[in-house]
Image (cartoon, helix red, strand yellow):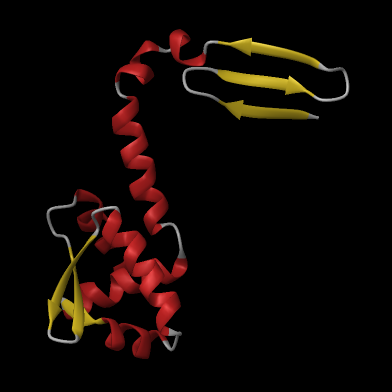
Length: 126
């Protein structure tokens, strides 16, 4: 069995059973990755934040209506409020959504400055 473990600047391969381990400097072999590591981490987090059917459905709802309350979103999706709120929080934290508070109501809209948001629209429209 091979287990891949990621550490700060190296990738370790451990072969379980023989108790042998092979380590190599992954990022030293590919300096262009090390130089842009923060960019890749941020992009991967943003992609993970849309990699769920509920989140994609929320994005499509917000494309169609521009702005919706949390209640409007969970009513439309026929889902429990805590589940929808958790997905909204993940997307907001990654910069895909903006939140607006009006009294007791919370509204969400897409962050149009985000390039990923603009790129999803043609895919969701199909």
